[in-house]
Image (tube, rainbow, N blue to C red; front, side, top):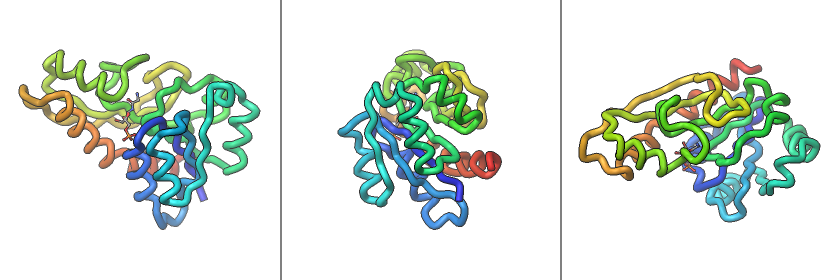
Length: 190
Ligand code: GAR
């Protein structure tokens, strides 16, 4: 089995799409969800699907022995970031080379970097009157949103699309493409 650990800070709709996708999968399973927020909705999803969960704080996250211990304990093969807002430290990237992937709700390199997440992105896209937006799935390196790109998908925008509408269009692309891309990367990473 290839074990996936999902890191998420929020509601976890992407985590949900991934969990559903791998439900009854013959060779890939989600077996740990890690969050940096005690109130994150993703933790309820872990409970509902009976997936092991862990809440971490900054001290845990900066402690290689502890974090790598958690990941070793569950024999994590691939780390999947799904709305996880902390920068991944170098020790983790080194321990999981090309085995950490992220989804970003914009067409990188545009709208990337620190502070560019969730609704902030869709508002900036709206203010700049972009005619399209989309998603970027990429490997993680120690800089925000700069790792090699695995896949991008686009959606056209209408002039009257509000930031909320843009967000909904982009999220639909995330749910459609992230689970299958995770599957592809997991199989290749074996
Ligand atoms: C998603 O849109 C994801 O792309 C974004 O956070 C949202 C989480 O939604 N991630 C970032 O902005 C990372 N820079 P979810 O909790 O419903 O999956």
